[in-house]
Length: 309
Image (cartoon, rainbow, N blue to C red; front, side, top):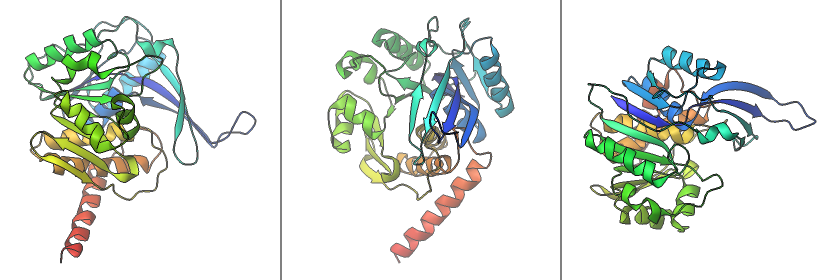
């Protein structure tokens, strides 16, 4: 089983337009880093449980219905608050601005793992440096419990909202992480390094076993304890909407890893997942995600064969 822990919410996505100009489109979508990852895992056929602050309200019911439709479990740990709702404004390039409320700070929710006899292969923290993984002590306690279960531990990251974050305050947590997956902006912010390779080295210096820096259209860069340093190019794709691309990349990579792939193979699979995600609107995974990923991978192998022939 895979357990995704962190944010789940409803996203109101506004595409185009302005205050005085009608939007091109306005849609409601399930969102949040942990929910997005759980959805991708489920579509790819993994047994997955989402642990998140989902309330007994209308927004929460939408999330419950979507989880049931996709076939993954939802664990709230007895949370009694309201479900967060955000507004995401996207432009013609797929970039976005978000508006949140106090509900996004998840008051009353403590991240925890479900009580289950099923073996947990990997736990994903989505996202580190944002609630519910903002307080270093809460993060460390959660990480210790996860490692006691004998599973791999991964953390995606987000830019902080009104909080000053220093990696040294999370040093005990970082040395327990098997994977960390920031994007280029986040890696630069948290490490102070403009070169992604140097940023990855900083995370590794804290004891993170594998630092995976997502570089959007430039692909990804990886500094791995076992496989060393390498870069992979992105798959060409017309960007319609970048929402959820990083979450899809991370879930795709871990899906591939737990099936025995090397980190290089898994990162290539993840890049293909990300390319499919940005080609459509919203973070919800395409129902035919696996088939489209395999098509991209097949084309890449053919291209590599031509290059090396």
